[in-house]
Length: 126
Image (tube, rainbow, N blue to C red; front, side):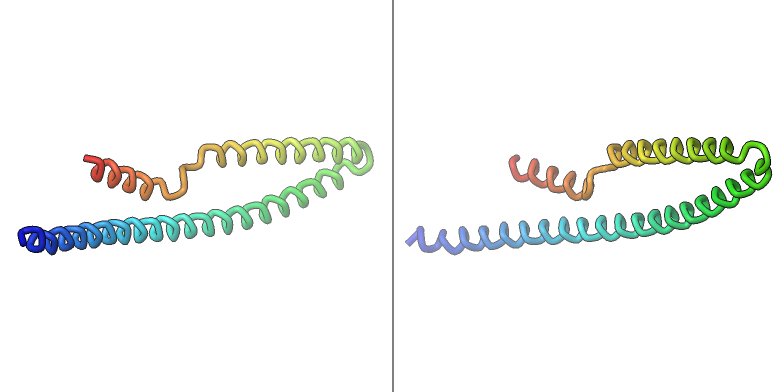
C-alpha cells in the first residue's frame, strides 16, 4: 500500500519536471526568435545602406571617369581609361577580400541562445 501512495508523488514530480523543462524550452525559443528578428533587422539595414552606397559610388566613379577622359581627350584618353580600369579592379578585389574577412569574423548565429542552453545543460547535470 505504501507503493501506491508513493506513486502519485512520483508522477506529480515527473509532471512538474516536464512543465519546468517545457518552460525552459519556451523561454529559449523566445530568445532565439528575438535574436533572429534582431539579426534580420540589422541585415536589412546593412543591405539597404550597401545598395545605396554602391549606387552612389558607381555613379560618382562613372562621372569622374568621364570627366577625366574629356579633360585628357586629345592627349592621354586611352591611358586615363587604363588607369581607371586598374583602379576600379583593385578596389573590387579589395572589397571582396574585406567582405570575406568580415564574414569570417561574424559572430555565431543565436550565440546567446546557445550559451543559455549550455548553462541549462550544465545546471541539469548537477
